Image (cartoon, rainbow, N blue to C red; front, side):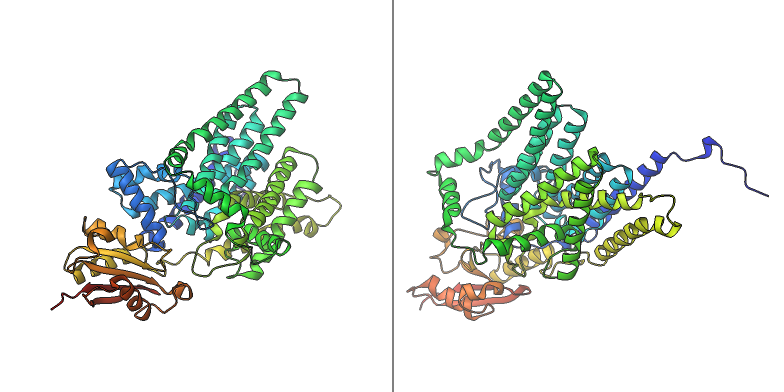
Length: 541
């Protein structure tokens, strides 16, 4: 007997299936990001500094005028980063795990928005592929598991790109305000995020030109009005910076000018050599991770992005999809060149430090291009005269590539615990210090000097408010302990090894000609390569 044909009412609509798959991908993205969240993310000076600022912001009302300090000059990122994290800090009492969970939520939303953008460009299959790739991306998961300003960029840039494309496709100018606002957030979260602005602005200019060709003066006026609103939002967002500049003799501006005019010294690698390195890092990062950890997969991933972009953007028939791929592909080209010129440090990889997140604003572009290209392979049909095997070859190739990318990232997820133990290890180290000092007052110093001691200051002040005093208030008291943090990663800069020699030399320099000799109360390795030494001056006889 044959089974009866399904009735129309028995069939699950295609849109429902697509929605269920999409929801499943978003749930997968969330699970990958929240597992072992307290221990998964690194905890160092940057995280301690950000939590100190957030604590003062939400508990004392101390509004930050500047964002986190940059690593490419003596200036700062934007303060909107702290505004975005403030809700999580407020409701949790400045709990780092809650703030990290808020960042992880942003990473999940970025998956959904990126998938939506790919779908809007090339249909449901493209949306599902792009969302799945970003959901399982080991790099994207890592970006969602610790506190750091670049880790919000994938969310803001995906919103900027999606809103810009929606504005173009629907001809609703109000979406340009959303795109512009998201681009401003990207700029605040990392100064290099300014590179995304011309990508969004380029499509806005295309919208203006198209409305001009269509004889739509009202539409042109609406887009110009949206552009003006975008500019106004950008100016308003930097009012805190302007207040700081007026109070500090324009220190940020002077530092930025010094950097741009070569104050940081000549780059170690010439521009022609930097371009291919930056190209590989930008294209490979969201698909295969850090270039030094996987050079061959990174090269293959970068080649895949280029081939798919050229195929769908310049060899495919003229469609809205081709226009979108050209927009995103040229945006990537601009990104690579701009980063090679403006961020010469990307030509080298410093092991032990996160730095590929600096170009995270390009991650949605890369993933969408791959999603669109693989979707074209998966749905491609050849001429009827060809054999069945030949007709299936493109789809099979797309399926193989997609499976390889998913498999690679599934086996290269961040470990359950960061090498430094994350926030719980920092809390434990702070408790050890408090036991060593008997709960008394202490001052903090760090080696190298350019690295702050905020990694331990925040947990100390959280466990024992008022225990950390400034050097002026505590350096001369014999009962004030002196705590020195030493990072072996910078032993060449320090001029000695941590774990004894560097700290002992530093404490002698701190006491100088004092008549009180320092006594070592405790020394321990809080994390691999990160040493804590606790001293107290002995009373003279």
